[in-house]
Picture 1: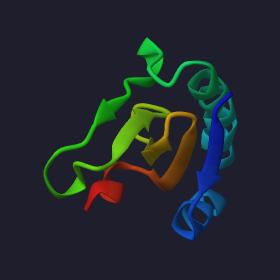
Picture 2: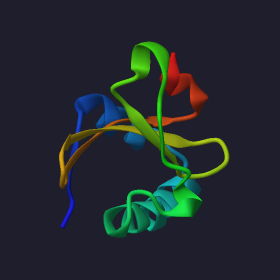
Picture 3: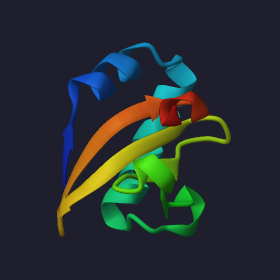
Length: 86
């Protein structure tokens, strides 16, 4: 079973999301918990200065940036458009 933690930055960004993205997030989070590498999530490792982070797609425009802390312990760092990578 995967345990998901969140950062204050994630919580703040999440609170500003449109309601339709929040509903989509709930579906994607369930997929992620069952299989973090499900093909519809497009999970991938980031590069450059963000190389310790991973990302998966909530929608075409919205992404979740996260870290694998341990095998079954994940921290969601931020959620938003591609601007979260800057």
